[in-house]
Amino acid sequence: DKEGHRHFMAKEIHEQPEVIAHTISRYVDPSTKTVRLPNGVFDFAKLDRLTVTACGTAYYAGLVSKYWFEKWAKLPIEIDVASELRYRDVPWTKNGGALFISQSGETADTLAALRDARANGQQIATVVNVAESSIAREADIIFPMAAGPEIGVASTKAFTCQLVSLACIAIAAGRIRGTLTAEEESVLVTSLLEIPRLVSEALKQSDKIETIARDIAKATGIFYIGRGVSYPIALEGALKLKEISYIHAEGYAAGELKHGPIALIDENLPIVVIAPKDAHFEKTVSNMQEVMARDGKALMVSCKDGIAEAGGKTWAAIETPQTHPMLAPIVYTVPVQLLAYFTATTKGTDVDQPRNLAKSVTVE
Ligand code: M6R
Image (cartoon, rainbow, N blue to C red; front, side, top):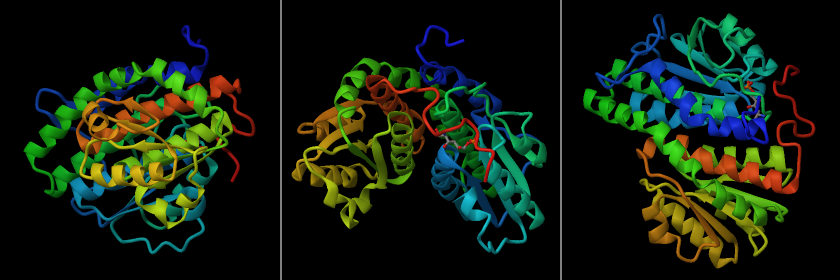
């Protein structure tokens, strides 16, 4: 049941405030502003390395978590796509933990990587949406996420719920390892509790994004750039757009543009700049200006202040609520999802069942 929406993808995008709140409630005690983890999780104090493995969008959730585990838990972390990790000679550590992220819990490569990690003595945990899946069954520890059934092939609410789970795990890991103070935890939890409302706010830009998408639909290529925690969101934005609109899209770390991709910039190439107001804002803006100096069409995604400060000469801007800078990816995912969705509906593609793709990839 699409509940009045044209596509499951639209329904799932709009469900995010609710399912994110559900996922938060699985981890957070709002009265004490602390994160609780299920019993029997990794011994984070002893863990010497965390290896995070996934495919596609779930992999990008893992990439965001790298910044969180490093910053809050000072935990050495390795992240790779399952189809690569499996065939590498990973020097597994003695007290290593392996974390697998999957919506379906049936992705063949991720499952095979899990078995490989187990054979190498790692403790196995998963952030998985489908509780009765193969990956859930084979893991020692299941970190909950509460996205509910996701039907659209393009993953949306599962991604933001994965991010919430991972943020909570990283916060708790920081507390356990003594690298995050009680006060820092309380600030992060308070910000986390605001996320559902901010995601609702971000959804209000739908009409504006639909208008912008009419132009994007005419493009033959599009770039997305971001720095720090916004870099994986650039990758996710590009993946979402290519999956359902069939437009060639690439995501780059903003600082990498001038190492090659900038050669492709001209007046026909829109470039989506994910630029929340954080420590990287000025640098990202200067990358955006380099693009504009070459006649690229910059679409700035930032908060009100960010747009007021640097959005003046951009081709277009999408206002997105300001949040804790480290948690911005959860909110900044919404505009890139909507942009992909409306670009696809403008082009009239089969949004929920894009060509050549399956909801879960059970072949290696
Ligand atoms: O079910 P999984 O999370 O393991 O699936 C992983 C990828 O196949 C999946 O995220 C894919 O990239 C989506 N179609 C992205 O929208």
